Length: 473
Image (cartoon, rainbow, N blue to C red):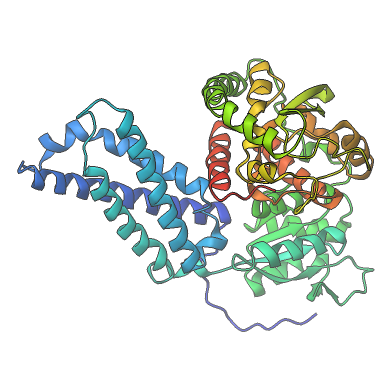
């Protein structure tokens, strides 16, 4: 196959992680400058000298506000490069993060002892950080022209995984990746895959790397490569080209594990460290569960009389509803909710998914579902250890048995405690069928592989946003 030898200007092609790191570095610099400006205004208003003697006792604000910004930015997808590429979406997230930061400060200020915190400093800071990050983000294509350069890649393989990867890049990362073609095996006569042309065979990989300035090869299957293709991949690797397995890149750009496309590769879906008792994350997570559930219990007891009255006035039946669910290691337990459906909701049809506009839901039940108040009694399940604050939502045994037969790796959800909220809940809409269950499983497996206190905190913040938007079903 012939290629155009015309020279092309070399431009830096950054990986997703590198682009995000640069965005975070820019944000950190903007926050630090904003804190400095806010301190300068504070000194001016207080008629004090703005010098090291003034800054040093207040330097704790750098330590507090920089991590707080990174936490809120991460929780609001401010480093999602699809959002970064759209100025309107970036501005909307920036406004939301600024409001959240002010709300957090006001809550702390309200409960703090008088004069313990400065009154207007955070306002000065909020205005400054909004301006500086707006300049950095909204003008980043002008400030850093290489930010917009897409990473040139070749897809190695023509199977279903290649089709899935091409589709995922088209939906989630078309501004980040430029697919220059597909590498096929010698006996493959296909002319294109999902409108992406087959540009060569294994022996053509290295010439293509030079001509097309390829920076990454996406390999759909490492077990079915012919000798020529494997040799071509290794030649490219030795010349500095990154080699990325399809499941890992799919996971990176979608936040999901592609369970349908990894066959028996169990190592891709299970955390390699396991659930050892000496893992400090598990201990800290359980401690956080207990503290937050005790606080939640106070809210539950406060709302219990009013919600009980409204539930009984709206429809006859019990206040609470319990259901058998499957939890850690496949053990069953009873989950508790405020009743949001008619008492005879499953008299006909048995166990079934709830759907938007479900006629079985009562009027007060609809409100409780939208605000997630119906889930509040599960604080008791968290205290008992049946559940955690964050984890895959527990499913009914009937559904688990059916879905385990249909969906690969579905049982993997049970290697950790189920949660009151989870990655699938904040990234996907309410599931009402088996197809939705597959998508949610992909998100749940991503959480299982990447679980951390930072991810848990991000999910909690996103959940609060979902509650405020009344997006429940």
